[in-house]
Image 1: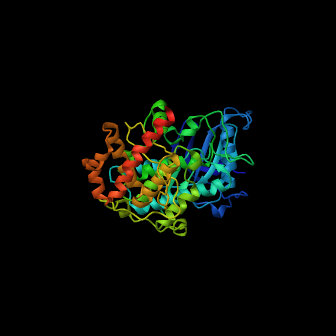
Image 2: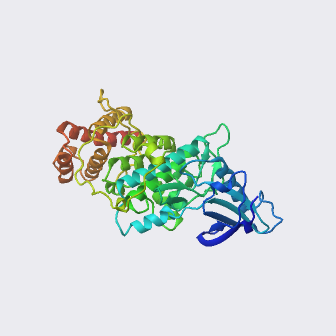
Image 3: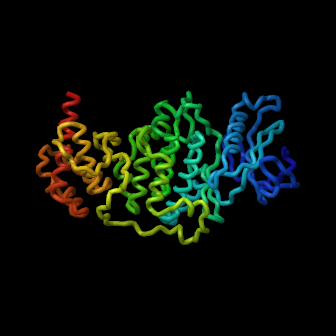
Length: 432
């Protein structure tokens, strides 16, 4: 087993409330069962946690439990986009974990620096989301939940432009026969925690996918999906969900919007999975083989492609997945309608029930695309709150302008008005 004299601490590369991360170099040749000398690079990263006394059992101290958890999880994982584990050891004062050294910093710093340059190029966002989805799909297959997916725990390797998932302090393995884990305490970074965690519900792989959606939103917009420094403020924003105005800026590529919408879904049961995210990204031209061994990044790739200003109606995606519709902040309509989904079949019966309304919404969405439907629905709902006469909806400036921009036909416009009117009547009947 390695000892501290085997390494020379070069510099501090990270510091937190629980410990310090050093860039270190080997001082002599040694081998361990998990890290032969020939596999170690010139530098390594060493995470040090305080032991608070040489007689304290690692199984009973908080830092000792974190150290044991991280070592256990890193030993189990071998993936191109998960930080490589080399060694672990204990002294009288500290716990140590030795991993590969990544000299590109973390994505939190990368995003902060990119704000002054402008948006990332689309192919970089494709690549990084694909790599993170691969890592999460691998972990979830092993029944491991990370529980702290944040840009600060995602490392950037400049030599090949790869993303590496790190920091398994809070990771856990799901109990046998269960797809969830119940914890007495909410753990993680507040801005990236799923609503079910705030509601003291169960952890599951879907909790990681919520954080994945937050990271995707941040890569595209260079800002937090749910900003705030005070916990009550963040909790309120997470429970409210994204607003339509939050998604309206994501016009560069509709696939990004779809992934963000379906991962930031309030219901973990219908939230997009890691495997589903890989399928989405693969359909839009990013193969997994290309991402596992990516080519070096050209500095000009950090300059984004121009944003699309006039979106055209797009062909419906095959095997459509549930969609989370977003409304304006002042809307009384819930931002997470669990019954809205895509359907290729036109409505075959009168819209007199929620089931009929569901079919109608699904068919309209399949004809004009979910993004266009959300924009038109929001405009129609805003008009409905001010005017009861929906027969004049198509003459309003906002609705008419949207219909002309996306070439929405008169029958579709009539169906949209019917959807808003019927929805209002059904809810009045249900709650009267």
